Image (cartoon, rainbow, N blue to C red; front, top):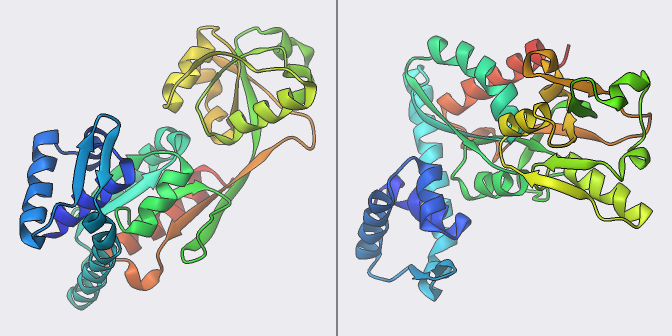
Length: 298
């Protein structure tokens, strides 16, 4: 069996759908299905069953899952040892990022990293924090940049930065003209655009619940770029991290500060431990720290 087959199996087990897993791995659905069929032929058992609601692990698949995870970890450790002997970082490295990090930090990071390390083949996977955390734990991601807290105690967590949330509003909005920070309690009657499961989304929901009202949501999206464009077009307000709002004038919306005591988010780099990182993952880890110093923590 190959590492590609094991990654295919773990990705489907994590996502629950072959189509979603294929997109995450950069494969066609037919290509991913061939990987799974080859793996099942190798182990001599059916590992997954497709149902109308998604892909479900069989009993054999459930039993095989922890072994597949450990096998990938062992292969990564062995590759890291060989790379240490060779002295040159090379090969694939998979980095999971939050939507806002993918849009507003990753371009600067990769623009510096890729020319400096031509032997390394980075791949970005964008998702929400719980999914990224699970991807690191299962070995389908080498590194992830996600929001704290991290639930799993077996992962290594390095705080990268701490930032406030701010309010993104259409140009010329009345809240801009107030000329002062606003409290979340003042915003419970506003209309919102949002990304599900973001820190800002949960903060708005909590503020509305405290006032006994339901948030008015114009639409939801899963990309930071789309969120900013929707605010720009006047569909609603968005509670976003400061990272996303640093270039607000270029994106066509205004930024309003929140009052003291409003929510913040902590962003961390997560991996399975230094010994599990390949040389390629280690140099990317160092590059992430340097990029944060240059583009965020200043």
